[in-house]
Image (cartoon, rainbow, N blue to C red; front, top):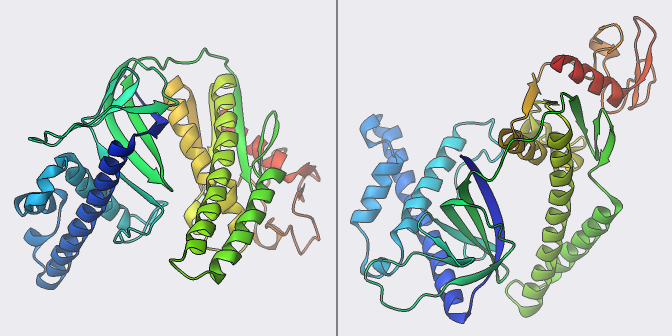
Length: 380
């Protein structure tokens, strides 16, 4: 069985809008209550050095469940359980600095543009989404129309509802057998990710097209306008809505480029080699950090990993210390010290950013093509 996540747009009626809004608010309440309790347990364990009082998902969940107020019983219990589970995962990331979302969990704000909740008891009835009711709840709930649903045969394992600027979306995790392995091609490729473009054996893919620059100019314009508005005013809310509208356009455009490229790779190649980059620490430097963030290195690897798992293709990760850029693909000579190539080229030998000149065999290569050939050698 294969887990597939399908994102759909929801079209609830006025009654179900109130239901979804209340569930989003309740999830935020549960998260904040759980985080407050988790912080208290964690501080107590540090002071007393007693591991028995150290917080865990089950301790926090049981205490919040026992101290439920009467009004909480009108909401599904799954909202509270998944809020505590997500908080537990967030605390695990806090102790793992290699995670992209590393950091201490924060309290949720009702002013944040994105709200949501999760449940694993929703159902799909006649291509409509039906949420689970709390026990003893007699008021009518209705099936929610949705658009973009793929009719996959399988069990709906998890439903994540999201509200963004009055629009509702659902991510449906389905355990299905409809995803089958791709036919074998016996072909091998390597991808060298760069700021603004990805190089591979068949050419170059531009991940920062001119249309994206236009969107970023609009973002810059509305950010300046928003800074001059009175917080909470009608003009402020209208400008903020326009700003996040372009954030969505940027996200959709980049997702479209990455999905098409990763799908092309798994369709045409059996082995794919990429670099295991430490994106989090690379973005901490001011040098090209904005370009790295916009190029979506981490998202590209995420999409490629799960598609390789789906379709039975092999993904090879080059070690972070593998000198794909500094190594000559012709003779194997590795540049060290002042001879190394940087983002600005090489100051000692006055070479450009995209030039690779081997001081051992005299080969003159394109820097990105040389890196692709070095990565390709790992698969062979």
